[in-house]
Length: 290
Image (cartoon, rainbow, N blue to C red; front, side):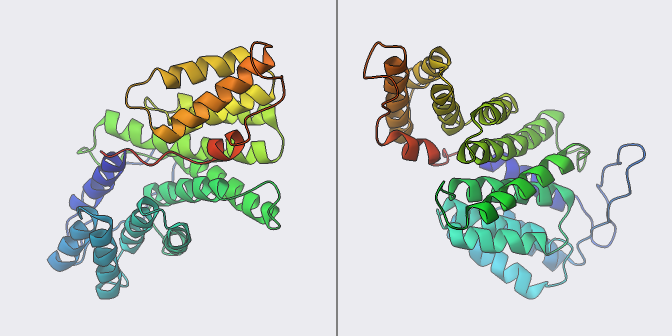
């Protein structure tokens, strides 16, 4: 999915001629016209392409820093900062990811970059929020603001240009929606709203053709809390039968399966979850390599 997102955003930048704004799509009827964004020089275009086509996280961070330093007023400053935030996310550097993602939102980005950034922030903050955190409400407020903001943008977000296929665009939007609903599901779980969490996790899974195994295990945990043990078992068995299963997901699936069997009276005492299950379920699996 990382390759798809980079590819879509790169296409948006690659097809815009300097000072011409070519390649923009038409908005839905009645929607306000988007800001016309342009690359003002060949050097600016090449510097942006260096950011988007960097092959390592370290190279992308350096290229993004170089771009925003050389072109501080660029219409694509937000896109470069998003790429840097995404690189820090890949490095599991939560603090810098949040710093650069919030800089994106301060830079007047295009709507696609804004929605992607909001979904990224919502999911990351939700993953780093605990039930007993002293700043829990502040964090959950940000999760809800960013997730709802991303979903609102997606309602009317048009394709950037004809070079992006309908399949790519739908997958791009679907992944953003999946991340936003996943974040809202974790938000609901922390608030002890199990039914709401089940709804959000299911919506997240349905939003993409390749749902995250982490989301499926969070849904299994929510099913267990709701006493829907057969539904939890079905998800766990699906995960455990998948080829090349991530070891972390395997541990969570086994723990949630044990909880479900216990709830059905066919294993450990009902209501006695494995001690490591909640923490493991809250942690996402490492992003698969493209």
